[in-house]
Length: 274
Ligand code: KIV
Image (cartoon, rainbow, N blue to C red; front, side):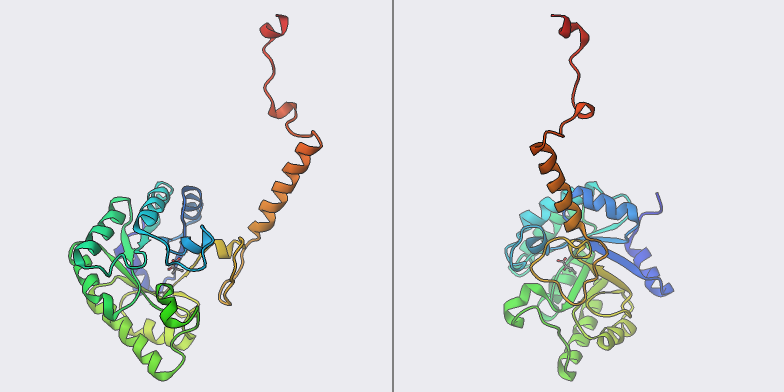
């Protein structure tokens, strides 16, 4: 196995201009495959509400859900740095509840937590970091604020909105975040933020100049989904692989081709004699 990815290695990657790779996982087999492929960061994203459970947004995901998936993902990881998402409202109901919820994810094996927003979460970021819990920020399109944003839309297109996102990135860095996800913002805005920050920016729909990139694994594998944003590139067509295998299986059972002798147990000779 190559070296274990750590927080300080991630920061060094930014300093050296090495790109950081990140993907989501919600279970053991995917975590293991991504880890073995050499991914740097695995995120147990609250996107699990949509990608794993078929919900229309991420708002129904709870801390119990994230803890459960973090435990499974942890078992598949040897090298990658494991980040778990703090779900909707799990870090807004007072600092004690925030610490308890983050602590739960860490005790399930996460090495850091991710939370969305800036102004409203700076105090939480500071407290988590001072308790030894690394925090990844997330600004731009923040799916937990979907109703406030009016949908899954690109953010920071106008000068004032862009300035606000730059300010939020600075706030998170000053509060001690070790990295920040930039979701669905224009390429030049993401580049400006990446230049201004010492911590790595991880882009999703934020162009090529970020220090790293993240995608929802189901999306890049071409698994079934109700929406496919412009920024998703499909690297495989797993939907066809699964559908074709299932169709072949169904067909072979119906035509008595499966199970054949190769996939059946022979009766021991002793029993045959009875
Ligand atoms: O929940 C998630 O998967 C995320 C990534 C898309 C950044 O937040």
